[in-house]
Length: 183
Image (tube, rainbow, N blue to C red; front, side):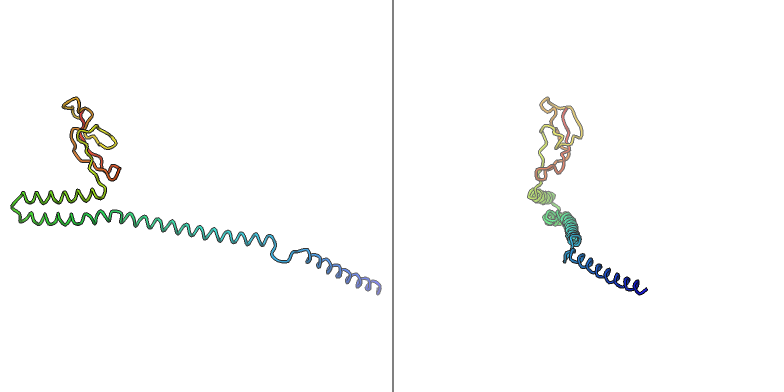
């Protein structure tokens, strides 16, 4: 029995020595510092962070742009309205003067002056009247209300009468001219 105990004791330390040697070689085999997986995980975290920040920045840009457009729409006609206020004041003065006026010619002259002021202001803002009378009918700028027999052959297919004047705003049609066409 002593022999067995002695062999058991000798085997145990030898195994312990072998285990220490194996553990020492495994420790030497692993690189010191972050592994490739750790580096990839760090890069992934950095890329996700960058993506989230970029997405948030774009979302803020989109919201800011929408807000600026809404504000621009609310105030886009502001300069035209401000330019029309003096004309509105002139009309109010004309209405007050009609109560006390006895001379119709003076009121007519005042109204014509206000009309000219309004027309000039709108022209400055880019509004141009459309000359349609006697022109060849063009469906792109005219709206035919009706056709009537042309008094002469040269008026066939041309505008005989203008019921409502048309206007251009810049180069685009702001309002189509409502016309009567000769047939």
